[in-house]
Image (cartoon, rainbow, N blue to C red; front, side):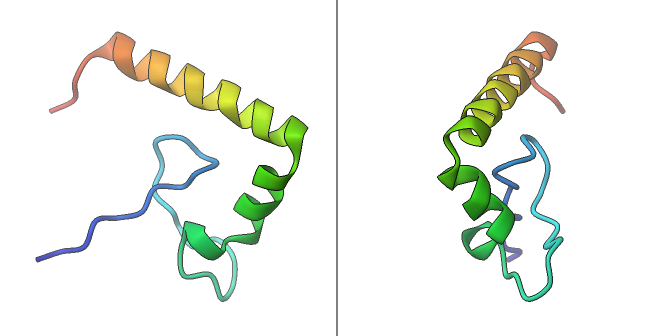
Length: 63
């Protein structure tokens, strides 16, 4: 059985690509940590996630 691919918390709709050295997933990604600790960046991320959900809902379910 294959394991689910973790999604990148700061790139809505994209998988975690382990884009930093020595990272095992979103849980220890320093970029994610920095974004989540910064109020302004976290708000910008919330806007991006909201826009992503709206686009996804507008196109309907994928097959």
